[in-house]
Image 1 (tube, rainbow, N blue to C red):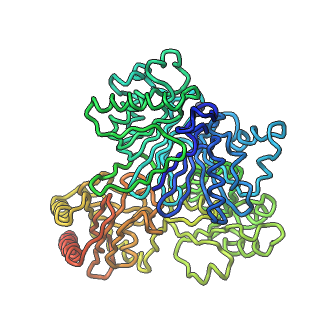
Image 2: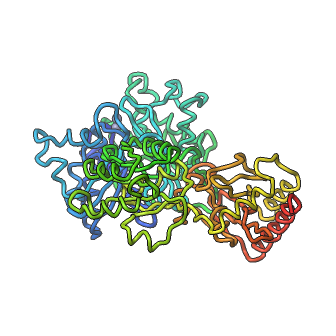
Image 3: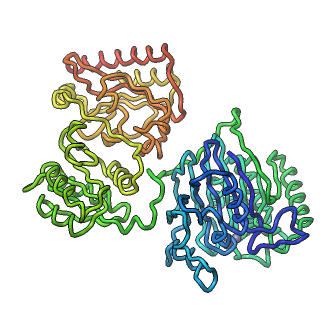
Length: 601
Ligand SMILES: [Zn+2]
Ligand SMILES: [Zn+2]
């Protein structure tokens, strides 16, 4: 990961002979992952030079992302001078904290009103997508981004970027929650501890250090850190390198030198090896993963997709659904993202409503009173004048459909029940955003009814744990060196665990189940890295707890040929099994199968 400082000054730009070394431009950082994902943090005046450099780089169209910490002037004033926004074909996503009163677009447009600037936001040539975000984790390309609130008079987010095995944190503007910590001493607790956890073991932290401890008394409540606080909080969090930034506008180069030297002495006294430097415009740092150090990823809920563009909330989804349980699940999935849902329960009314309401997405149940779902879809496709050609029309069926059937009827996608709220929510987002969904539900096996009968016949569902199975999962985890091993049954709408070594829940929805894929294929399934697999990357058990990266499942096949579940291994690290290990897993599978046959032969 490459990081370059384009603006390091706080509050206002300060060009001049005394600020040449650390630089006079206000906040702007460029981050590029090894695979070329471009993320800019803040657009102070430093972003102008960065824009020129990007345009000179010959990449067209330019695709990039801008994370804005907050909309104080020193963090957005360069935006109207950022060249790539004027070039048609370029596409930029802009993320900023969700404000209480004004939309992000409105705030940014405000500084580009004609009184202040000759070009309006709307006249920019590039395509812009605005995302108003709250605390949480999401992905931009191959970069995992975690946003966390800072302590500042304006609503402000810090950003932690994880990619290529390294972590970079940007935390400007921020004041100690407990002001007594400004001197760089005292017990770090409460919200300050939470802030330290946000920086935990990062390779580079770029932290607000506008003031010194000696100046702080006169600056309380202004929303900025002292160098001493930044150093102490980073040191306690096990940070590798600390860049002090957001230099006070009155600070000449030699004064920044003095502050950096004092902080280095302070850190050295504690015996810490943390490297400290003053962020200087033009400095570029390339961070490489340290093979001896296991990067500590942040824990916590991860949203299944990128935060939604604000225009998203004006969308309408039309549901033509008769099944009350399905209607309730769909309503919940759609409402979770604040999208409006219209519901009709028969075919004719759904068709009429679709033509008058111009929905952004239509979801139909296959069996509908009057005209069925596929017929409503065909009728809609004939009304090319009223509906958009790429309007996604989804049909939900009770059983699997052939691929040929979809194409013939103009159905964009078929889903098969059962469907969880989380799964539908992820799919709705990807249809509306026209982005691929990296979460595929396993197909329902052709012998499903016989399979479920065989599973019930075992008489093991919802029974207490038994040592004869727990012994085997314990051995599996030890022999194959994984934290979690399970005996999993794939039931009608859930997967239920008869035994779970290193695992808490007794069941999860079926569409989240990896085992359902092994059951459908009736073959061993090894997923080396779920985050890289289009079937699993957006699955909530991958994006959130328990953060599954590796999975290996051995199907459990009964004498009548039906596959009832798996014995499986799960790890939070990506890995593989060699031939010998795959053989051992098959051996354990055979032992579990024998126990099943003892239950009810
Ligand atoms: Zn600032
Ligand atoms: Zn500010």
